[in-house]
Length: 102
Image (tube, rainbow, N blue to C red):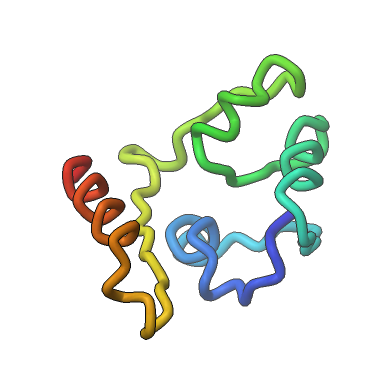
């Protein structure tokens, strides 16, 4: 199960499945994280989710986080802002705090 994004843009495919020439028997796209997360808790499904999300629901859904690959999957997240709001004081404060976590 994945979000409705082209396979070429999905980390699970780009980093693991395509290089290994593996194609899942069944691939379903789904719109919401809740449904993807719950389906991952069934014995017949796999969900690639952020570790924090798996940990948050591990007890209720009986799921366990498993690192993908020897180093896991690093992800860069970008901030999108409107051109007319780039001088916002709130944005500046957010950026200062975000840089501290590098």
